[in-house]
Amino acid sequence: MQITVSAGRISDVTVLDAPSGNGRDRQITAWAVPQLVSETLDAQSAHIELVSGATYTSKGYLGSLQAALDAGAEIDARGEGG
Image 1 (cartoon, rainbow, N blue to C red):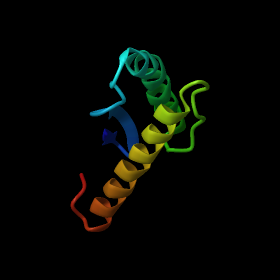
Image 2: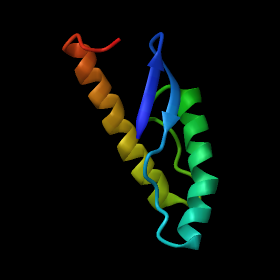
Image 3: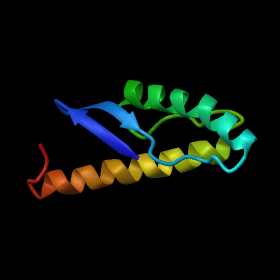
Image 4: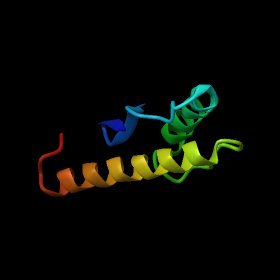
């Protein structure tokens, strides 16, 4: 996952890897990920609701989002962020 922060706000979320092992995985991903991204942009944090019917995808997304946010905070703390 890649997040873009602009003026202290999450302005974009790009999911680089999502479940796609079979048709059902691709269907759930195509339906759930846009909802998760939208909620992230609204909430400006990883404190969002799981998408009903897409628990596995939602939990993976949330874990990746939190890791990306933590990595960004670590970079900012070292003075390397922009």
